[in-house]
Image 1 (cartoon, rainbow, N blue to C red):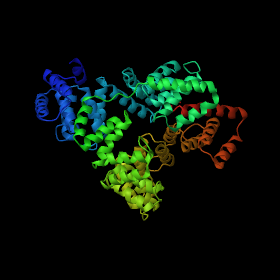
Image 2: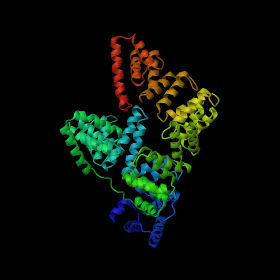
Image 3: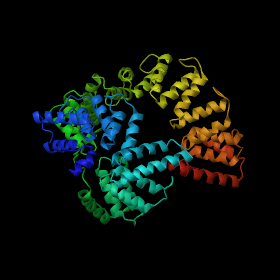
Length: 580
């Protein structure tokens, strides 16, 4: 009884009994279930948070009731409003990713915060992910402050045993920065915790630590063993395989044999994925086993990253019943050999079935396949046909491609006005790529009347999302005084933010600004440092000639100083840090 109370955070004894009874009964359908649902409905209506959670999940899964995501949201909202963290977390997932209700990512984030603050481990880890991604688009002080919040949530989740959070905590200790001292021993500790739960990336990083002797004594046997384990997981990928091949020449035949033996032992010791046994999974099983395709699909989602084979099995059952999203998943997996044998015919069969039902991701993938001639002869007209179907259903990537197709006349007659129409649709959905394309159309007067102010507006929207190209374009508008007052200092600030992401164009512009003294004091050393960096990220005779030509007017001491400045900055860029 205490376990049920902790899991559901119920406020009343009645719902605790009902939830416990339901779990014990295994949700057997029939008259007893009907009575159980009515009792749950009554308790939920009287304000019991646990019963409200239960009703919400029943409506979401379609177990014993007609599946209704909107009704599910209403019950989950009531439960979450009373502090039930499971309900709060489920609401965050529905609002953020379930197309059966209007998507509202801000609302999803609000519920995710509530669940994390209430101690929900997965919510804490996801919140850490969101702050980590945000920190990558910020610079200096903003990035450091965001990273502090990120680390707080990762640590909370890691201490509750979430492998992803353990991996990211280890990464931060490994590289240091953002308020975390570099500590290889601490990194190894967290990599090991995640690795022992089957986290492939953590296993690969642990192998690297053993190979280099960072945080642990150098040990090629352990390095080889952990890399074998990592590659043995689907997450090991090509990078892990390359790493394993690179290790082989460094170790003896005896060490290889010992490594293989240790890997076999590690495979046995590593925690196997545990079959999910939550209330939601039980309810999904009930509905799925009664043949509800939407429940089978959702069950596939729940299992896929835990027990892949089981996930594929449920996707297939839903797909065979005509569930479009499941058909898309099955087609995509066959396309890449992900969890199923790679099979182009099977892939195209399921993608077409999903596309014929209007599944936008399938339509987009079909367009992509014809555009690049993968698995079928290249056909731009056929590509545009599939892309249009996806674009009309709101697929942002398809809208952007269709705009590009009309701009180039690729598979369709060239039509700049039509291109602008599709760019605008994607831009209004928040796509920074489309905002840049729309801004460029206004800047050139292509398909619309030339309007630098509107171009600036679109570039600014895109740059606020952290993209280096958008920042560079906005910087150009400031530098040229197009659509706003000329401001070289603002241009330099934008170029600097973009350059810190490793982009070549803003590096070249910064070199030019320091060489001419526009927006910054004229500085030969810093100008040359930026030209050195430019040559690291962009090849070509013209780039090298520009750097070398500028060097002719410098002393040996200035060249040495510039090389030092460039090297320091380059280390910062490689570490994805913005505090340099």
